[in-house]
Image (cartoon, rainbow, N blue to C red; front, side, top):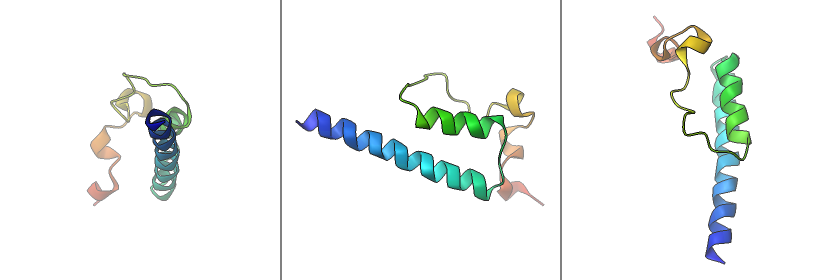
Length: 73
């Protein structure tokens, strides 16, 4: 059935996305609560319409532009 294949492919794609996110967070040396929130979210089966914004500045204490390594002087 096409629907079953689509669901299986999307599930696999989410697993791949989680691995990429984990790698990028590791390379950026990001290991705070927001990093773990992202990894947990993409590892789980549920959808949270309020997941974004990410990162949540109040949780990490930094604005998103402060977390961008490209902004380093």
